[in-house]
Length: 297
Image 1 (tube, rainbow, N blue to C red):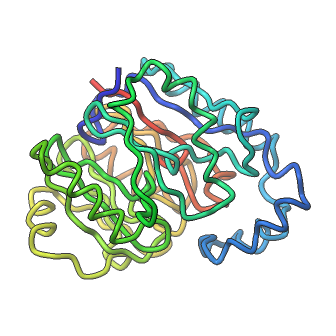
Image 2 (image 1 turned 180 degrees about the horizontal axis):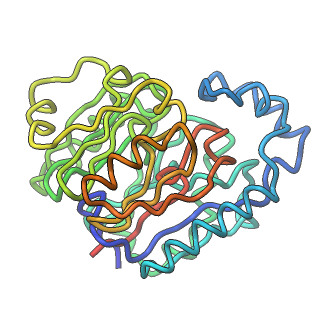
């Protein structure tokens, strides 16, 4: 049963990306790279554009470690069906949809080649009634990485490269009758979760330089959090894009550029499950991007 009301309650059911197939049809991938002024500016961008990084073996190994940690903490892990729809990259299911309360929202994707990727998780959604699956209208770009639930009544929606103001306005108007405030957060990153992430003990990971000017209502919503500021290098290595699997437990990247943030979190009382995860971050995402939570408790 779908149930998402924040970003940090105990994770119970989650879709996790795939390490393979990855960029197997090189000619098709090369043709589709014309879409990728949307590719994030990372140190590996040139290699990704050259179709040389990462490897399937690396991705599969790293995903196996990720799944092992999630299952150790009691989460049921579901996987996409790569045979159900073509994508040259099945690594980031967070982009293709998101859950608010007990409703699944299908993303309107900015990258045309990934539009059909929602079909890869269709079998996991079959038990959900049609009234609980919502598709935004045409023109409303809205991806899951730009949707961040502060609590059951407050949702942040970022917009820049992958989501637009029309997507924010759609979700705001859709959720207003439920008493959920949807607040705008313009930003400079690929997705909002690359520069902002609320944690279960009242902290907020934030990269201030990644945000545009935010309005008064959004500022008030964030005032109750103790801020942990991430610098430019830490953001580049996606130290913000970790995954809370419980109020006190976090999956984070084991990387020198993320080490300070991991230590800060441990000092604040969090259990940090730090694992090697370099393949997906090379393409612009990390643990939050690589997972699509369906239920938390």
